[in-house]
Image (cartoon, rainbow over all chains, first blue to last red; front, side, top):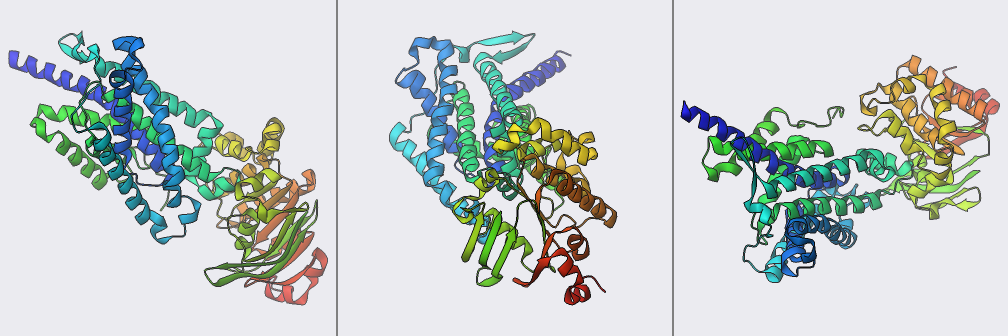
Length: 313
Length: 235
């Protein structure tokens, strides 16, 4: 009887952890989803932009202590939020000088719509970022120190890590803000129009190339915020991007390629699967569980949970 | 209003338009007819700036249109309703119409234009919150035309509005187009494969065949032309 009770508590513990982790994964996936949805570019460097967000947060909060005046509680949160606009600017420049050469209107007529060159380009950017990170930041794992990461809220017998809880709330707020931006603002609607139909978008006066640049910068900026939020509950090094790019792609495919809202639910699901799998599988197989779910989705429902069912192709 | 002079367009060595000239006067309804593959859509894409010509001139109200980037041509008052409808599928009908109103004039006149669009196409008012991609072909065509009208254009370019639609639907679309032209005095440039309907509506017509303008003239001349009657009108 007591054993069963512990199983139930374990279940809720994993569920809670999954939800908390899933929230930040969701935000991370939304970043990738924006880029894929608008530009139709498979960005392998997404994880490395997230890594950049982690280091930006670290140096703002702990390294140079720019945000030391905010104290140990608010500092990491503000740091993560600031990582967004900073990485946004990096993304803007990367698109301006690199991505724009292999994407946009000019490559539509190229072989396979220019996807080969795009893949090589984003892989190259990923390598430069991760190895550049190694030179600049070193290989010692770091984390953003916050007293929250060793404190938790107790709900009944279930413990909620406070750092993760705060990250979850912020991730949901950021994702909701993005949702409002995409559905309410003219710029957001223009991004969606450019994603839906770039040619028709140009006919109504949308500057598609500018939309791509904004989408790329926004996408990496959003993922960087998610990275900054994760940085206070997990240690990281310059190669961490690769682990997360897998999580992100699984989330985006799960949510339905091209659906930005779906990406959030996909990421949340991935977080849940990852944490819940520890109930029945050894800890080391967490990511294997993600892949199994990923393959099941691709096999049985390739359009994802929120795929574009109205496309009759 | 729109003046095209000896326009040449090619896709990778394959000539799509050969020395094409065309005039649209303010307030006119001009139709360009011709069979599939004649270069009608290419002509439109060149006017909209999606395809760059090899040579030739396009002037719009005295301005060199070829020097204007594609996305800014909409701002000049040119609305292109593309072939095959091309709505923003994952956006609602309302959002599609709002995207049409990105132009300065469209934004300023949004509150006047929206009721007239809904009056022309009442079904759009009923389905304003529905995703455009889930509408029927005819309804999508109405969204596309409505989106064009929402920009408060001076020149409405319609690329084969009949494409892939049932005959009854086509008739009602053409009725609406005629209404727009008659009541709002809007200048219309239409390309159509349905020669009879298009020539019936137009003030001036052009016949395009494999990239060449083979005939042009006012409505009466064209419909009484023996060649046109035999080849296109089946008389």
